[in-house]
Image 1 (cartoon, rainbow, N blue to C red):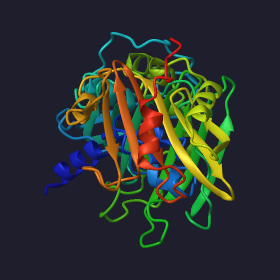
Image 2: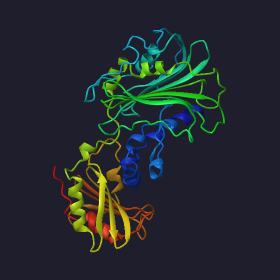
Image 3: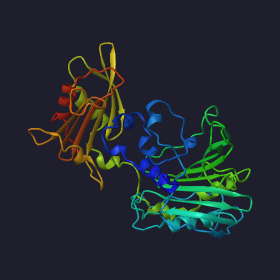
Length: 411
């Protein structure tokens, strides 16, 4: 497989929306940051250090491989010596972009040109960009990648821009130095409330090479995430270091990710991730707890519940044993490419016209945790057990819970 093909495969794999299917409920519940994790692709060192199922749910962070969007470009860039170009002064953060997606179309060439304009004097080669017109990304991502040389050696630079819905941003934290070696790392709050992550780290935490990877990530109140990585090598991996350090200082990285030039691009982006508000049935966590409590068999009680508008993680107990139930109640909102209806093509049709899928031992779908999945019109109810915990409910009891007419949306 060629390198461009491999890069494209990496990108497409990372974009797979496992959250659209219902076979990944466990990760969606246990890892609160999962739906944002899909948008961060290869920079493991910028992710918060997490454990258990949460670690399995994260895809990685940062640098995005870009292929096939624009022809390779070579240019000489002349910007202010601070590296801030003609945008905002160094250290000022970008104001909030429009709250609703814009009809403006941003091309990959425009994203690439914006990055080039913000760099100090030097030559760029192998430039590529992705804009909001990229059908693969559906308008949820803009980015650029290039090789920059200020006269001191070539440096790969990679930029990614996304926009997250309220509450769906995953803030970066400095890694444990015992796991990832870094020379410096900081997370600061800027005047407008933005969080700025700056790290001078290395490509390989295990010391197999000394290639340096310096990163800046801005998370803004408007949902923007601007992620810029640079290396002291013309490639992220597999190439000799071309200079002692990457060319941009942390202050210059900060100046670029906080520059006002990105406002137009951020405003043009669609929000990424799952729109929980659109799927909200109006049933609060307390509502769902009350309904579920009335459907549990005698002797099984609820000891705790947490979650969001759609998903609930319910702790149950029977005698001295404890277990976990994953409950999803949502209003179905079909998007282009949604596989939900296809997943129910072999379902059992209920007397009221609803569709039922059952997973677990003794069923046609034996893989995965025991689960019952019901679709009635645009209402979906999914109930499953933690496969690693105590199984306090049978499959028949899960079916009874999921098919109950007690699940009625409030909106």
